[in-house]
Amino acid sequence: MSEQKIVLVTGCSTGIGLKTAVKLAKHESKRFKVYATMRSLEKKGALEEEGGDSLGKTLFVEQLDVSKDDSITNAVDKIVAKEGKIDILVNNAGIGRYGPAELETDEALQSVFATNVFGPIKLTRKLLPSWKEKESGHVLTVTSVAGLIGMAFASTYAATKFAVEGHHEALAMELIPFENVNATLIEPGPVATPFAHNADINQDVAKDTDQKTAETFQTMFKKTMESFEGKWQQPEEIADVILEAITASKPHVRYSTNRFMEDFLKQKYVDLTGDSLLQTTTERLKK
Image (cartoon, rainbow, N blue to C red; front, side, top):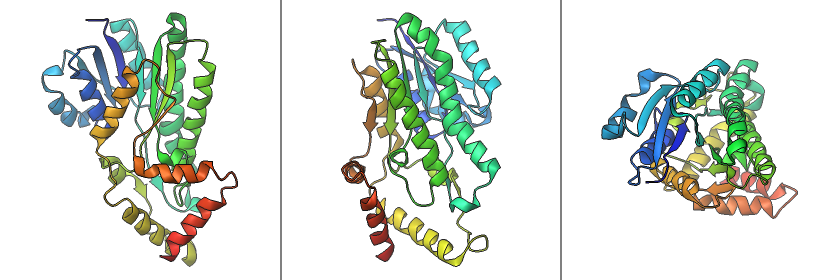
């Protein structure tokens, strides 16, 4: 067996993070030793249950709150002290937030950016020097199609995902001299995970904003959910894509996981004015 790769995965209490950690830990090659992390260890039950016999062998659970600098330092230092390295980082922890832009508070903005942007960037920054020194390492960050196309009433969430997309795209170019150090973006569309249910969605906006905005929000939310009907992916599918990227001899910068979103992406990237996306949204509101 080749040398085991030490993998750090964030946001593993449910969904994509849980499925990814378990899939890697249970890989038949035994090539991965996975440190599955989460903000609260009180939520580790589902991970441990699915991890089964791999617990304590190729799967280990650690506390890590990506929005806290000391938590990042403690988790990384603990793993490196034990293993001597971290080869692969999967940035998966994230917060969803939806509602009218003018209702955002400073506290909410800081919280979402701390988890969705600063956490992944700080974790990546902490590991880059050792990866460059040995010319081997891989960061994979789960973003969203909302990091490529702005979506109505998801301004803060989209902003965070756009930010990470820009960071990793630039980083991938920066890493060209280091042949085996890679930065990859995993871009799901709608995924059937607790993330969607846990997102901070302000659906009772009528009392806080104007009538036209409130009505538009309710209509857009309904139409968006209808457009996703039958197109939700399971978190296992995203975990499969992450495994594909990790095991690729030359991983792509981007992996779009949901084929039905490709038409939207192509629409944006052939129209540099952005007008076609506004027209599509306008037509959706009329239906």
